[in-house]
Image 1 (tube, rainbow, N blue to C red):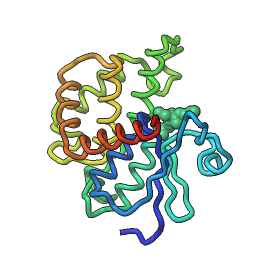
Image 2: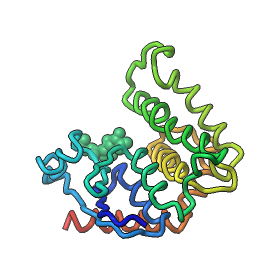
Image 3: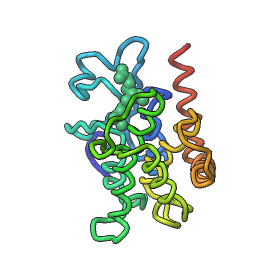
Image 4: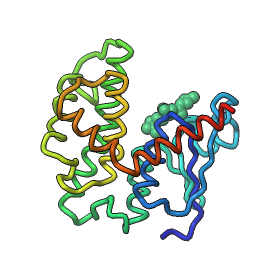
Length: 210
Ligand SMILES: N[C@@H](CCC(=O)N[C@@H](CS)C(=O)NCC(=O)O)C(=O)O
């Protein structure tokens, strides 16, 4: 357990829910949750921009160190709390697969799905980090085909990152309803930690509205 103060900057119904879920999977280690009210522009305040100049959530601050980007935060926290067993160690043969799909989610799946959603002309496949939407989706489907998790029987923080993405993209119909995705999403969203995080996020959203 880390003796340094840990703060999670969050806003409901955003990518920050990935980190809310991760904290639940980690067994809720001591940390402070700071909820930013987007409607009031709290994510663009000078104080918050000093933490994340992008004015986006999620972010964490551990001691004096800010960490932004959901995937980097997930990697950081899973390593910080090794007892939860969500991160293969550096000398574990599963580490490469773990890192690979977390980064693939951010570098290929997210931009491919966004270009598709916004009907943007993606440009030449050879220059794009994701190549083509179809190759990206096929590659992701293969990574999930064997299952039940990205590392086989072993649930890891990679499933929190990739699972959040798959769930979100299926919800917005940005992924085809292939069994590789739908059955994975079903497994992921029925986890008690996922359900706790979703209900906590809904409560936070309600509190902000009220
Ligand atoms: N690349 C970032 C993206 C974070 C992001 O786009 N967050 C959105 C919510 S889902 C946000 O904070 N939007 C507020 C804004 O940009 O004004 C990550 O993966 O953490």
